Image 1 (cartoon, rainbow, N blue to C red):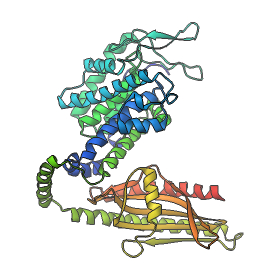
Image 2 (tube, helix red, strand yellow):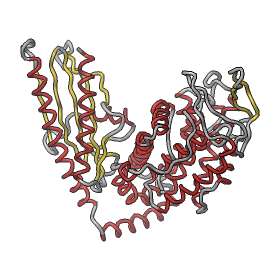
Image 3 (cartoon, rainbow, N blue to C red):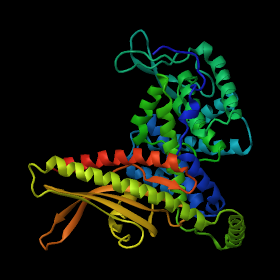
Image 4 (tube, rainbow, N blue to C red):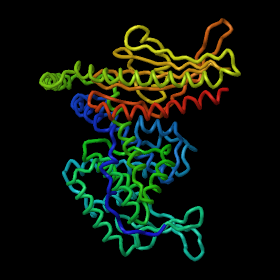
Length: 487
């Protein structure tokens, strides 16, 4: 792909904003003071930064680390003593140095925002210097021979030679020529400041800044790490979370960047918005505050202040009633749609399977709402949150007894330990098998989505319903595929 000068935001950027994030951010902001008093929240932030520091190097293939060791490092800290021989493909000391540099860069973003500084080329160079502090060389391509060789890395300054990658198909992807880097970076900074004045939503601005920076590719190496830090900076300035992308996101991430190269920024925006949504949900799902004795007075005072504030606005009960009304509407939509699917399946198999049983069962809040807790909890574990069915729970089943017994289960319940007006809907599928004792055992529980469908009192109903319908159709398709594989 030939190099093209930097482009501003797409003309339809207002239409690309996430509809899920604003209500979720509203809920989080109203609970932010309470959450920040939690010792668990501080620990959560520390782990989040470690995860980013480790995974950003894995995405760039600077090193590999086993998943189990990655989890250990996130939990206990970056320590080479925790990395056994064979858990990484590079010398352990070198890997730990790289990770610590990346962790320091992320910490520096918070200091940068706290100091109310504005983005500049000098800061971007400082960021690159810090990220590459323990990296002395990089790969270069000899254009005459086509061979790869190692060269010394220029740290904290713009590239002096082209760094265009060779694609697998033999084509060359051209980045900004070295002689135009300074002017293009100046333009990038100017446009970024204009976007802040225009109040461009964080998920759009972070994706735009990240992609346009990678198009320029101003450094000899380390551009991806710097780009993700710049995206995180936009989020941190908005009082959101730094960008979390892992090795599991790599393929989708690269595809989104390639789509942006073709002029379509929406996939990258959606990926970044999804990352933020997961971070907000993870933080809201923290358990009850675990506070040291010396902080209990401060916590009590802040709790009283929050209570007084809540008394002046809508009460928690009112917020819960509003979100439960939303849940009832979504419950009715899902019940009707699953019944339609049941009717379609029965009609399609009735001529050749006489004993087919396909039906739906539903229970709103009240009788039988405590059913299926095991399946709901197992699904929540797969998605990484605590499912609270105590305060609110309704569910719908689509049961398909055709050769095998397959069940699709939708569950509406509270996200996290405390109920403050945030509900989720999850979907799972599983098999029921007859045991020798005549009982029916549940097996192979699988979530049908990669994250729960969240909604709150801050949602707009029309937008929420449209969002839910799209989510539900994807659930149904994935659920039918699960059934198909069992036949």
